[in-house]
Image (tube, rainbow, N blue to C red):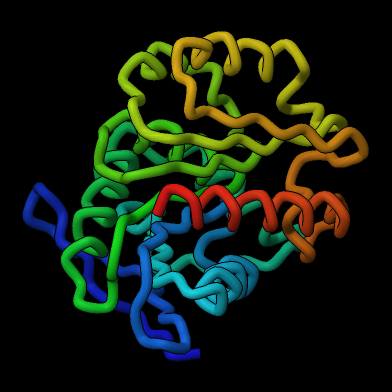
Length: 231
């Protein structure tokens, strides 16, 4: 892959980094891809590369940079403990602004032709929803965004196409939470919802025990179809 870490300027005068990976042609529509709580680790970089191989210019920004830059955690006891402590410590309002700045950064790059979406998993799924409300991206895809229901007052600000993926066995996002998200976006016609009855939380991550190959493949195909249509 043609990939590197690049600097992302922020509105408050700082700079942080993100993993940029390019499609084989060297340019394409943009995706800002948002990490789970384990950082921009091997899994997230590989997912970014997957979307790049489908023709997208993908930037995975370091969401935890204000706490500790370039976190890259494994899916083991030590990694999980660190990941959950970072999830508690991160300022999610500030992270939303930082990601919006990453969208702006990606849009200015010569390697981006066309529109730019935001796509995230877990914590990143919640942040994708919130960044959608800023109006910066042209589309958004949210995989099992934890605690998205805490920010449903922002749904009325979303005026871009948005897609959601949830596992039917996800104990952290129960059916009533999914229903609440749907109701909050009932006014918004370009909103798509997909549920995977046999999948739990984190079903797209092959490094975790809840990985579900079938659900992951279906969700990826639906995400690519959505992105192809709107970008």
